[in-house]
Length: 384
Image 1 (tube, rainbow, N blue to C red):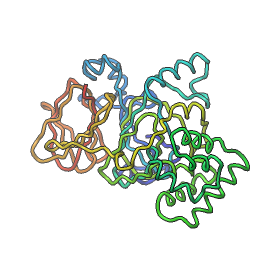
Image 2: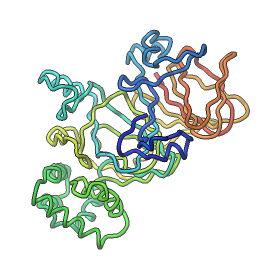
Image 3: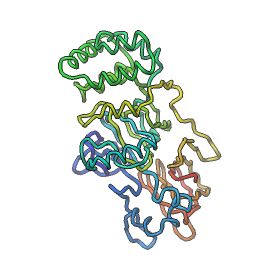
Image 4: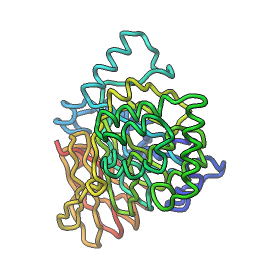
């Protein structure tokens, strides 16, 4: 469990009955073998061990030959994410830039825990988010025509806004993005005052999202972001892939999140933490993505819903359970999470019951397993 300040104190208790006697924010429930916080597994003989240690002892059997050769570790981290308040706006570099940036910062001798350290590893960080409750997020730049109409009421807030409105294109969007993040002192106060004055007359979205964010970050230049980025409301059961070099932020709600094993984050607002503006701008694609194209459309095959994604680091599917057993198999490791109902997993003489909020690790050499019960299982694995 990760107790970040933005986490909900009640969501995991309400959804999955997870006790919170200390009333701590419960932000993320991690399932995986991340070195920062590996899950622990209970083996068939009742022994409890670190999943990371168990994999290290027998990589090929646990991960499958293809994943062991390609990644050398469990290549994904699976989370339940509970946002009671907005997270920072983030951009994840692509794989090549992550490798270059990691090597460059190592050569410069920047400590791993330094505030100005951008690259913690040489990996990219693709992510998929699947809503368990209504889930509010921002993702990717709006279409230019949309940005133009939204900026009109605050055209006088900053010269870079007027400059963009004269000729809306990728280069001027890049300049606008950097200018808003670079604002200091009187210039910043004046721009935010114009934005907040507009909130009094503008209704609906994205103005309502700006109001919500301003309760937590009243003096942050990231308050302009909902005018530039798509504000997305995911209904329970909807999913969205987050591409590299694309600004995004989670604002409110509970979701399953799957990501590649990386901590590479370039921040872009809604944070008191360090923002490396030149590095950020160099790692952003200033191209619009229509809001209608952001959701990941699942492919149904029998009782399975597969959410196709463009990377090999992980795969994600949902399985509707029935009294009749179905086989769930893969050539890699898998983590199975009980979303709702009750799942009964069986392998030879072994039997495991998962209640909502509980998960099981299935090694590649234990696949396939038979599943039955009621409700739904989420599965994270590799298609290699």
